[in-house]
Structure formats: structure tokens, C-alpha cells
Image (cartoon, rainbow, N blue to C red):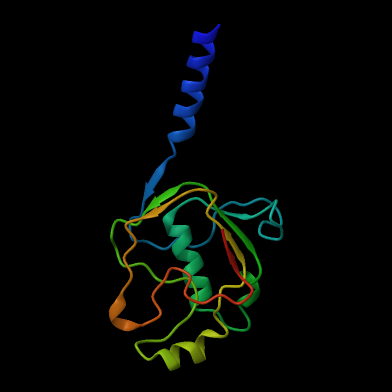
Length: 150
């Protein structure tokens, strides 16, 4: 009986640790793909981000937001569903705009702060490459306003 229990635990651990890693091909998804009805409206029904291209789409939504498009992402819930390998390609930050002038960045970022909830769900983002030459505000989520990163 002890051998069977050990075998079962070993199998369960193996299945748990076989998390899929998805390598980014450098593209931006056109949307978040098929989602449940009202996805993003609650923590129990988040927008599922299952590819690095969808994560890049979120960066595009936040970075290019206008007053008219802000409702598409502001205050929403997001959850990663896999590990992402960004293949050491330059990746856009999620929130904020501007170049090397921190004053300009800060001044323009107020409408582009990430305001939602991003849950990595225990997944990893590896080989992230950020361009340090164009900003002193370098982070995946450089500017939050009421946002949460888990």
C-alpha cells in the first residue's frame, strides 16, 4: 500500500511540474481569443492569457489607450495559463508611454496606468528583454494606479 501511495504522489507531482512553456514568436495577438462570457469582470472569471502574443496584446491595449478605448482593459481581471518564454526579444511594457524623459513619461502615463488585476497564477515569464535606452521607467508593469500584480 505504501508503494502505491508513493507512486501516486510521484505521478501527481510529475503532472503538476510539467507546466507548458510557450515561446513567443514576436507577434501581437489581434485579441484575447475565445473567452467566457463577461470574461474579465471578476476574479472568478478572468480574461485568460494563454500565449505571449496575448500578453503583448494587453501591452498594446494599455499603451495605446485613449478615453474611448480604456473600457476595453481598465479594471479587468487577467490570469496567465502557462509559462512564457519571451525568447529574449524586446517586449513592450504594460502601461505608460513616452521616451527617455521621465517627466514626459510620468505626465503621459496617467491615462495609461495599469488599473486591473494581473494574476500570474504561479507561472513564469522568462527571457524578458526590456529596452533601457528609451526610458528610465523599465519594468513589465511600470505604472500602476489601483492595479494589482499577483
